[in-house]
Image 1 (cartoon, rainbow, N blue to C red):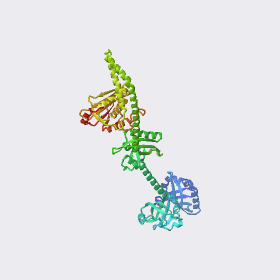
Image 2 (image 1 turned 60 degrees about the horizontal axis):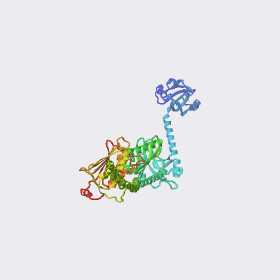
Image 3 (image 1 turned 120 degrees about the horizontal axis):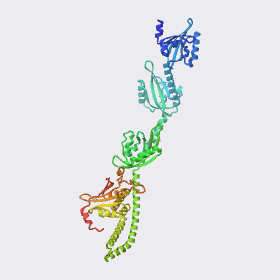
Image 4 (image 1 turned 90 degrees about the horizontal axis):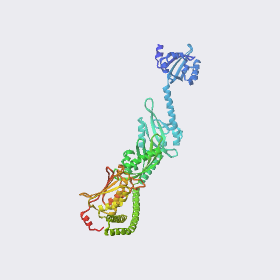
Length: 607
């Protein structure tokens, strides 16, 4: 009977001698330590005790031998799996048999839990504002943190309720809701503004936790608080600063952005959304591709190149871009960016985007006016030069043509050569005349019915010497006169500009031809200028008529030529379109139809 009780008991039972040998152990003891029975009976149990606990275990054995009963003695054993087992012993020594009869309880989990609770309690009471109250809210325990922040001593706080630190900033409904929550056994969290002993206010982030007794009834409340006064103050200051920055950004039309280069996720300020006319429903997070989609193809590639350069060289960049808004409008913006390494592996770029449309528009207008002034100055100088050249050339030219006519009248055998000389003299006279007219500028240019074929011929005569120098050909395809309402000088300037651009395009190609065609067959008057220069890059076509957009090197072009051309044609209510053909580029100018009465009346007007 005793043996069955010994073996089947859940308690750890053993019989041992004073010299440290187990005489008998039950199954619970074997299961606890993990050794087999034979091993336990053959070894001194002191070899199983944790080295740090051997001396106190020997001391307890000596006390047992002296007739003292051992109660609640704890020591540590090392199990077969090398785990630490904490055993709580109750033992007695039988003098008749000289044996120790002992029972033990494995309290490892309890002690670990108790240790963790103690550590947690210590950490809380040392680092967090702590208070414990009874169910009526009377303070029964506080830590030094509570005393420090409130200015009261523990003696002044214990026995009082939290009304002692009530600031009066919260109404009765606030505390009623708090008490209803914790009285129902739930945890309450929130911000409370309290008052110190000296009258100053402080703000705490509070967690109030109900504590239950063994019958699951609330016996106390523990309040854990953290002082966030400075954080709230900083947050208010930060919000005020952010509001000021947003207002400043709105006034200056400057938005902020941050790009995660790896994920292409973009975080923007509200002003950035406003600049791009985008909806801010994305919680300030949009894809970088959405911003790129607003830019021209050329600016898209340029901005991507800037970002790669910034990432590789760790240097800031600045880029002016033309934005196509959803409304169809266009706007100039300036991007700036710099590396922003977070140290977390991801690479970020941060920067600003500013609406510079008004500034850029004024700058473009200024440059256009400046360029126009320079051009007018050149034309004025050219006019003076042309007048001087005409004066100097006309005298010897008159002598040459006069003698040629005289020789021709005398019927010399070289009649064909005399005729060639006279034609050359006429050509020189015509070129000088065109040069003088082209260099003349009018303050208020008048629009009269003009023969477009005559203007084209004049333009070709001025561009033909350059075409011959670069071994290019200019072909004119026109069978009838084409009349339009316009200014002769301005339209001649348009055609010369387009022909010169075409000559630039064909200069490096084997086939160097420029074709000028006039069309007026039951349609609106059209002028077509085509070249064999290989065409224009598709990414540039969209903005080809914008100011400062050019496919030439900086030394060879300003990017204003086609912008001026379009401006002149807009003033003439004429449309210009550009397309690429099989061999090169094609510019088509469509003029408004001229009334027949005006056209017929032009024949009687002197030139």
